[in-house]
Image (cartoon, rainbow, N blue to C red):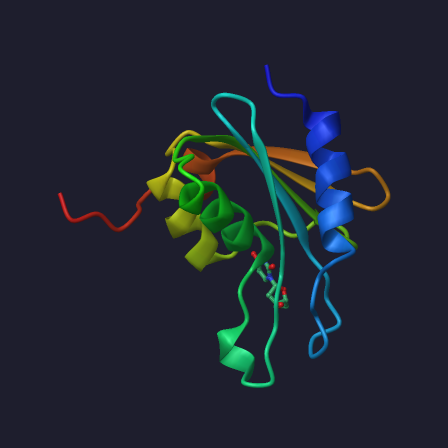
Length: 128
Ligand code: THU
């Protein structure tokens, strides 16, 4: 069972570290691996706007680069309503590391919207 409350707390702390100087839109993410490790991420922007990286991908890339490739669940925390869903590029990346990942989109008011990645992204790119 995924401890969603702990993941939300981790995503909240991660969001405070967002480098969102250009959009002003801060995003926090927390990914939990199949063996219970938590990796957090925030969005990181750049004066060359197209180089921004999303919070979800920061979290997943941190996990994978530390040797954890199976992500069971992910929280994305934003300050809007409804809470933001993962962007298309992130959906493709998330799919790589668990097509049936559980994704919880949360906002600062406590709204929680739960999804299965397969529902958000039913037809991924594959090379099979
Ligand atoms: N962003 C994310 O962190 N995750 C998404 O899924 C979409 C967008 C960030 C990128 C940019 O820093 C800011 O939100 C505004 O687009």
